[in-house]
Length: 391
Image 1 (cartoon, helix red, strand yellow):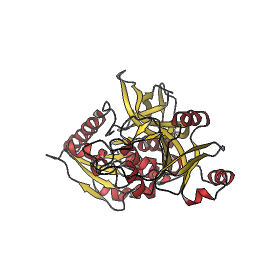
Image 2 (cartoon, rainbow, N blue to C red):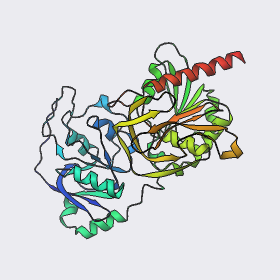
Image 3 (cartoon, helix red, strand yellow):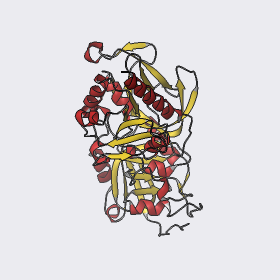
């Protein structure tokens, strides 16, 4: 267990694009970081949040007041690095108190060059973000802050590009394909497109006997088909789904080939686009581990982990003919609905083997209500292999 490296308090500012300024203390690295300011409601699991590639380009505000008491360790990393641009907390832990800790959160942020701020009223900031929506912002500390005028800082924030229209897929995907062997007897093969995948996702798959071909986002249809997968999976990821035209075309090729498809988060939005529906930016998004979702078919309510700022634009009731290609993909319905705001949380195609969910069934620190989604993937793979055998 490593003690926190104590440094003398230094001033820091968090600035929103509307000119609102929050004064606090520097936390993590010193400097300037700009991005979309969003809030995450999880009371635990901050390391999963920090290392989730879906947070690329964002400054994350933790609504839970006390952050950092369990420190950080290599085992709980969900990817190879910290992805958030900036980090804002109210009460940063002064001492690490967990036997699994290998370094303090402050030291992890500093070594990852993540500029943070502590000691601000995150409740007031969250209420402000609920009024404004997720907006551009910046955290400023160190030498640059000492000589800067506040109006100049606001101007820098306002010059930052919006998350709407932003693409991060090329930044977060793996550079080369990787094959992950199953634990125990192999049940089948899944081609998993990495759009910002978390480490827990392939772990769930290989634990259930699936061989996973983890593929870069630039993978072509011919390269994917050469694997002869029993199912195709599209992962979570950051950015605006309206920018992912190449991945939408790849998915349409998968659907045309009749290969079963399952997607989560970004993969849900791309299924919506492939079927011909639009997507839109949510006012302040869903980020946390306490989001209630209704499974329309069973009537069961699942408490889910989520991290998304965009959603599929489709009526939540009834069956709908997918608009793309004069209805070539047949009927689709909304399979899951967010109970806080009636946002689409899942899609089910009725005439082709394609389904998706908007939430994260692989949540490492959050609820496990949705983990059976991977069991359904296994069922899809088994059915596909039986179909191949019969033919």
